[in-house]
Length: 553
Image (cartoon, rainbow, N blue to C red):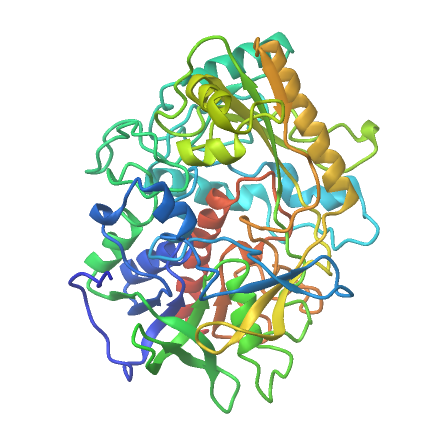
């Protein structure tokens, strides 16, 4: 079990300036920025603080035993499609559960939102039965912080390579990663179809950067931690820089159960269980929740009180509502020659030609396509072969031996409409390992999202065929019951009746309580939310700092 390295230690009775709950994509950015701005900070993280030497390429430990993610044995969830259905116990969300959060094991796609993502409701009009709305901020408001995220963390890409790119104030700090076989084939097939493939922007450093070594192309990237520190997770970047200020303590193994209020309705800290199960209260002048789009609303609902009987900061009734997963589709192809896709990062070429699907097709939505191969040897043997392939025996073994190195995929990443019934709530009966109500997920894809996903999957198949695949097949496109991108559950807005936080991430109900993670999203974007989450965190840090220095928190 990991222990935190040498760092500043605060007492529980120390009334620190900021208590941050969650030390992942956004929480670590907030911790660094606020501690650098002169504030005392404690960041509580429910998972461990792993050293890079503790990462492993053991597929079973990482993928089957949840080494880096939430454990469904200790943190069970239930799922239902609609509020009228009975919730059934099953894994329903996956997120990074360690210092660094999901950025430790993510694919490292680092896409900016486009201008349309912030104003789509105004452009497209209302969609019946949804909470489709504009953001209270625009792309222009967030652009400087996209740039800051790319330069502070380290992103590789080629500015201007796509004709669909939104405006940017600076190029990427590093050139694109070397193209893989899947990228070459994707580019050839896409160009035959008149499309505009371009180098994938990724949060992986292609050259030495700020004291970190570049990618060694080991091939264990998506789903695994990076021993090199080349993946631009906050673990080798934001976290050590926050600790280096001498004003920030990262406290792992801290499972928060409640945000505590005083008699005036102000947050005074959080109650949490440490790794030994002992319950403690850390005092703070202000609290920032950055726990992801599922755990943040769950914590607010757990923090109900006489003042907030329906959950903390929930006068709107929208805490947990409008959950969005994004859509994902998979098309695969086998080729004559070896591709050796097991090497290096996942994605080196993408296309945004269908970022906005033409409304003439009769549905809302859009997305991006990426060339990749996400299978490890074990997972490929279980899920990566076509239905027509042998499924057992010597012929099955021959198929795996020949085609593991000859297979690639094109994934479609798309939009999810915000539906009020799609939500995070507390289960009525099931408890977690700490005796707290388990998370209940309610989710049913909007028909437009399914139509858009099928459209994207068709384009992916077209590209594989144009690239010369000997055989192509795709996975069925249907309704989702497991979420990786956890977005929209505490949405941002100007009106306290229709949102949970304002444009500065401050809750409408509690002046010294802030929320900043995927829960803030008003729309889902096109399938790669991490850079937007981190850009929002940099922006929130500036807003929170300004309020604190003016004595307005």
